[in-house]
Picture 1 (cartoon, rainbow, N blue to C red):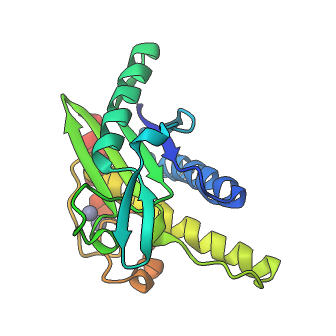
Picture 2 (cartoon, rainbow, N blue to C red):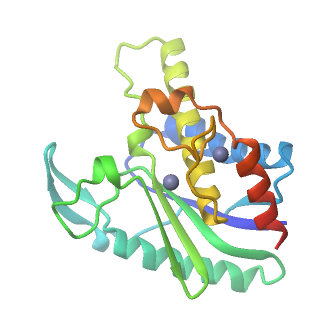
Picture 3 (tube, rainbow, N blue to C red):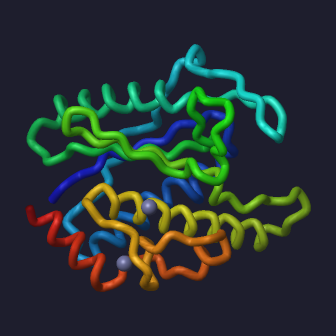
Length: 214
Ligand SMILES: [Zn+2]
Ligand SMILES: [Zn+2]
């Protein structure tokens, strides 16, 4: 069994999103791996605390926002993973996965981050750091939505995110994009993403299992 350290970053989110989306998606992913006989599990290592000193101001079409630059996040995640590996010495773990509640930006202010900067992978001395922004998967909740509508929207949000997580995990074990009904088939838009099954096609599943046997 191989483990992927799992954490999240973001302090300005509503509690409902943390409990209904974030923790559920983590459980759903592990259930998915188990049911599909994929010998990998996420290991929750707690929330990642970042010092406010890392925050930068960024001008966007939606006004000025405060965000953490990717470069800083990657560094913090790398040392966090090293620390986990040292503490848990006896398990196989060389990857960390962080969800962020904010859009991902680099120091380049012209980066088209809403569209193109969904997830990033960085490998530093054999350790893989993955960061995925929850932002593009979000389903906006209106103040006058009924309890039922809210639940449905949070469910859609979670399902989109689960597929995003499975997609990035696929890449982390060498899977490339495919054109089947599969999470490794990148969508042209969010509607297309909603129509994808939350899983890998037979071919990707076999490749993933093979990569994990190595
Ligand atoms: Zn991809
Ligand atoms: Zn596939």
